[in-house]
Image (cartoon, rainbow, N blue to C red):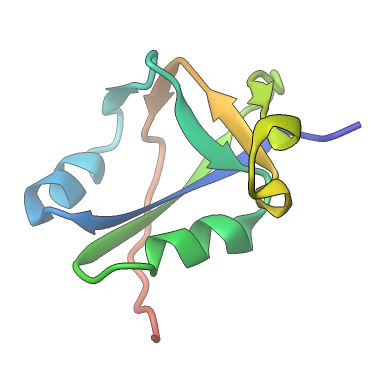
Length: 100
């Protein structure tokens, strides 16, 4: 059985204004269209590093374990992909330097 209580989402080539907006504690982000996440932190982190520009790595607490496990449908089975839909609320954030 897979565990989706903790998920990760990496984004790259983000605009500075979007990074600043996402740093607002309490911000609610509508993900109802469904987005790709992973149970594997390294997968999401590596994806965030694939392009230049501002990057972000989300740690998503998903206590209900909701989401659609897409592993069997994905060409990249090692991604441990979970399609997540709902409202994400920013509870905290921290800024770290990345090394390429």
